[in-house]
Length: 212
Ligand code: VGL
Ligand code: ZN
Image (cartoon, rainbow, N blue to C red; front, side, top):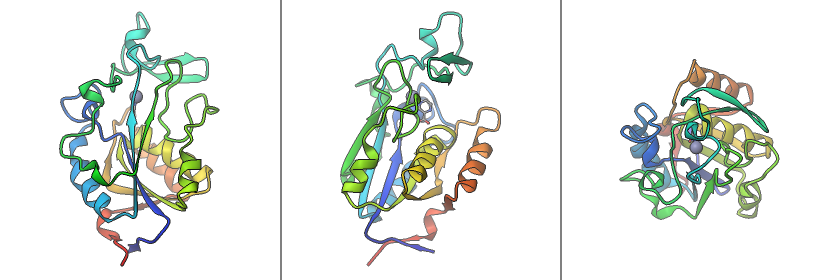
């Protein structure tokens, strides 16, 4: 059992329309996270949401690379980049939060992937691994020490955010029933293994107790 305390924050990653079944880049069973994420948000002292938020001509979109198809990998200036269907275009309906997601208690919404040239799976560091989103500093100013991650997708934005959170010195817990993955070539298993190796706890939401 994990009892919540001051200094704990929930980071709900990219629970957005385009990542749900029927969206532009659907995560299988992605809508299943909405219930657990809502229940988690209700119990946390601090809640942060992220939103994938791309310009319409974003470099991660296969549509910007003639002759290339979604899910192929290309080499960009900063390294390999998986190409995606157009998704989470700024201010489009698909970039909105999932219907039914209760965002009322979120004290901070961080938008990422806004730079046309650079993707950002991580909520902390863009794919060039140099450009910082400012989230680490913001969490430190808010006295956050332990970060619980949930949302979409396990094998992209959740795992990159979780590993970068460890590198930033936060204690990190991933809530296993409140995440779902895209799963390209075993990427979900690989993500879970990398997180375990990094000392990240994998916990079910039923084992997380509210404080007080
Ligand atoms: C994500 C692929 C592209 C995610 C975002 O939220 O995991 N995956 N953009
Ligand atoms: Zn994206």
